[in-house]
Image 1 (cartoon, rainbow, N blue to C red):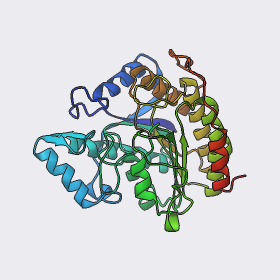
Image 2: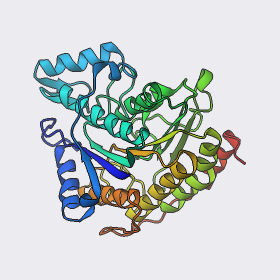
Image 3: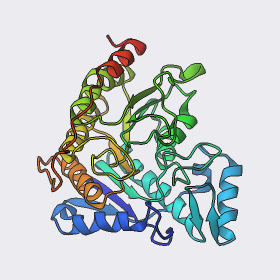
Length: 343
């Protein structure tokens, strides 16, 4: 079985000066093509999601609003989130290609995979777009795993520096999806959700785990969160598949945040996630691109993720360490262990 890759650059979904641009995808592919990694990976064709798959996680009113805005030539859906005339089709392509990769992993036709797709998805709620996102690609894939492949428990781990409020919203009352988000949190930092006490509601109580770090969290504390909090909670949940919202904007050089991860730190987190998938669900894991707005950190982060998915120990890091010291996150992790009864 091979690693599978989907690439949906959505070149026609573009707005001058916007940080979430096709240039992100072109930078990634330029780097991948300069290495030999693609010769060891199976690339899938772009696939368009059926509307029926989107309605598993989004309201018909939201789908209609996006479609009609595009039919009028595009425009802003909120202050940060735009469409062009082509964006509706391209968003369906992003979700559809993610879903095809999920199918291959669930059917054991692929060992694992990565969806390099845009527009991104994890800020898209059931009834509302936001944060550059139109359709929630990883949520669509999670429901595909359940409704088509019979998965009883789906784990979503979100390592984007911004909280995935959309994914949380969709699954907040659902005990069949464990949503874990590790993110920067503070006053005036987008989207303002993902506090420690947001842990789910109704039957989903306890199935949302938010790890809100203040600015300055880096390799040491992300790794501690995985070892001391995430892995013990995942072991109890015992997922049938692991989906990862892979944002590379927690790197210390990213212009939209103030976290302190290095490329080596990201690579170690990827290894931990793959290890969890190997231990709990026969290695079934799919990474889905979200944020990342510095082209070097983003492209080398993706390359290192593919190295790890292939089982290579290679590390590509032209950026090195931050000059800023990491901030201590002991109290955050201690509070979380108590809250989730993991002490």
